[in-house]
Length: 474
Image (tube, rainbow, N blue to C red; front, side, top):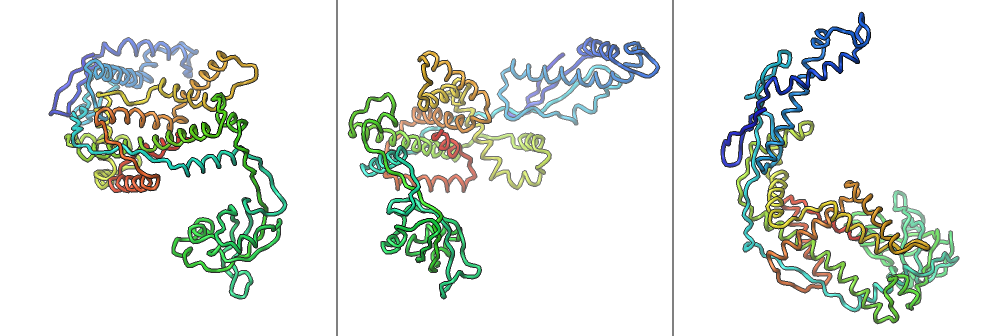
């Protein structure tokens, strides 16, 4: 075996793999003997067919298999030994290699085209991104405390509707004569009584029982946004919807909020020894801050990432990369389609792959198995109240085994991988940029996120934001 390379230019190379007959002869001979022992050929007892016959039937295929095994085993060993940092994968150069004749074993030579990862010098001075910090008003803490009290409150289904109940039933659009309108809206809806804006309409609903009906103007009761979402209408149509509806009550539910006391504190934050409402509100506020900070970090990463792509100036081996993509996606992609989508779809993705490799050389940001296990363990510990009679050591061992099992299935932890990736990337960006912190309201933050998403859509940049945000809820 002999593997060498020829550098075609700064980025592209041709790797030559020479396989001598002696390299594969022993492997083929060994397999031929095994085939002879197992072969069942008419006219011969099992294992007694002449070796010449076995060779004529099986040798060309066995030579091809053994040569291919040696090629790829030694090709990738050469790449590792030479520490070649490649982009994509080596591609067979069929024109230089020709068609190997495995029916007549001899020395073989194979050629593979490859491309080196372009060198990227990250110029941090060109990146201008602020790290946002969301101001949490006392009102938001009030709302969260109320929601927690409801979440741990008493659930019931009363016979009659009260002023704070959740109501569900069927709404049917009425014509001007007060009868159901032909082709009109007929949908099942649910709503909180607090969503009913008109006081008279709200009063007409209170006290109603299952199967009782009440007629009201939907626009006055709920407004256009509710109608658009629940009546399944376009925005323009919802704004013009002024019909009355007949609402038939199907049922209602009621949650009596838990009293704000030590019992609630212990249920929400077990083991934290919260004795009064002031400390409870403080802990709730910290939880809100933590969630907000996570969202701010994600936005910061996306903005820096887009700036890095905007300032990308490395030369790419485009001809090779197009060949590689076509070879990888040959069933669904044509050269014409690739060319038409190159700048908008494929080029941004390749640029980020190159940038990602450059960032990993500054500081590792790719999540590894231990990172995933630690993340899963943290989530499990926060939500695990232990089992009856379980020791602390037994609990730790159980959680460790569960985390290892979950982390081993990469398909199921994709969101977690994205979340860890964002965290590691954020730490790298923060170290390099030392960003200015800007305090904003939740509304202002939402507007920044909307603008950021629009900028990413315009440039066809895929981000891990959505999956990372979902993983926060795990």
